[in-house]
Length: 89
Image (cartoon, rainbow, N blue to C red; front, side, top):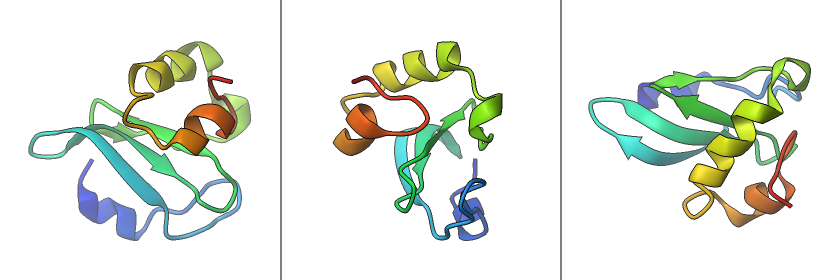
């Protein structure tokens, strides 16, 4: 994902903009990271350079929790313990 994309992204749930970006792995583009809505506390993974900004009902806990667990040391603590729709609490 290109950093510039953050200028136009908004939370699909509450339409909040701007969103927070946490980069875990970066090459020419952001390979893995987290997009966080500071308003509603939802987080969206960036996997394989693709931001996955799906509404809650289309997300899979079986895919999102392992991603959050993998990056829990680099992710914001409030997302790890209280993030929506899934967290590690």
